[in-house]
Length: 219
Figure 1 (cartoon, rainbow, N blue to C red):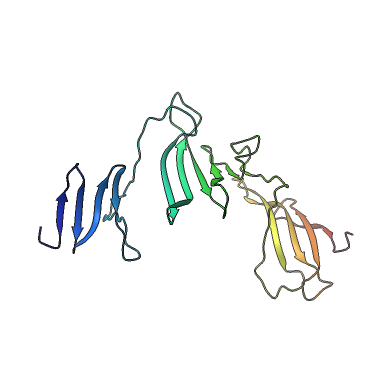
Figure 2: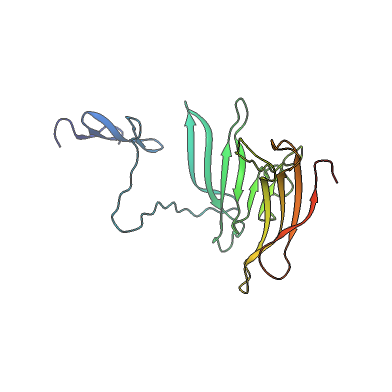
């Protein structure tokens, strides 16, 4: 190595790697640290035509034990992290979950979202009676969870959709939308300020179509 690029072995076993007189990689008491600068520097795994794997392997003994954690610190404070963890099968040790944590200002970092081993998703369920999602999507809140569907159309007009829930069947005979619930801007107001709900069902062909409507007066 030349004078600008060097490897230094220090007393106590620490090793430092320099590039153009800048320390890039060095060992510490807790592992290896990479110095990133300027903005955008970091760890890059590069290949050609083959897949690249980043693997963490450890034999944890319990359920919901973290195997790999990706942690984001803001000025030395942990503000968000993602944990790849063990599932419930502590005998076969062949199932896993993913947990996402965030921290509010002045608050405590806590789990906000979980992907269970069967692919079900739970949002804010850590403090509920069911710490793993029961349905495909579980949302919990102490004041009652709210699911919001947002239209970004700033010029919404009469009969235009605000949001919709579709019930779809992937039947091999004829995949289709079997029914739906749709929120629309009611035609009685050209500016889209009044809301209505439509309910659609399907008979023998095509997709669901409107069968019932509740207008802005509840009729």
